[in-house]
Length: 310
Image 1 (cartoon, rainbow, N blue to C red):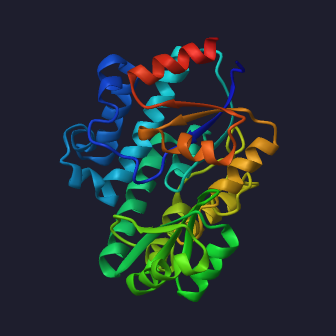
Image 2: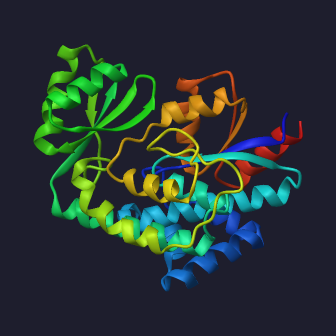
Image 3: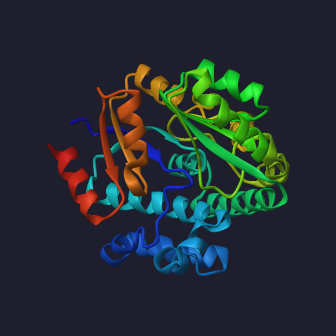
């Protein structure tokens, strides 16, 4: 198998209490990263990750830095185990795009962690000050779901995979979209258990607050192409990095297009770094021809190392 890989990072919703604990127990490099994170944030994030409770980890202000940390810890130990691993591109679902940029060297681990913590806090504030909801539209094509979203005065939050699209906005608007789904020919519509309307206009206050934080963060061009959720292409310059990371707070996550673009560029081996194999599931709906490896704990790390050595 090729040692040239694209690394993919999980988004909010994949988190689970205890993620990364066995990596920290087994690998000093992972332990050092968690200790560095606690010191940088001035609080015990690792305690929340390892011990919960679940509702505390699920809070936007906690789960975003927790997933960022877990993804980079998985990458750190993978690189330690596979010395000739060559990362050729990176991408991440929503929050995971920040992790992808850290992995590609756009900003330092600590700078990225602090940005992500603030992003989570801003989004949590936006959730608390608005009444928003989200719903998954299963079995509808992009044009149909987009038209339904427009009719319902909500936004399309995620183009996750063919037949799996998420709408987001006011509770009234999302309820209208759910009610109109079957008449529009969409197989199933299901409201999601979320704190608010992510990737919609109701997150505008969070986007406005994040903009100056990004402007003040030291960034450089990434070492490898990083695909943007907002544009579904690799970012071209520093201004575009800041712009795309800002605008994805209210903009659509164009994951299907991003993955299709990476495959069109000739990439065939992808490694998901994060809990739950969510991205592997989406990849199975986007393109089954590529190799997809998931790493979230010691057992899956060992399996990944064997697969890469084969």
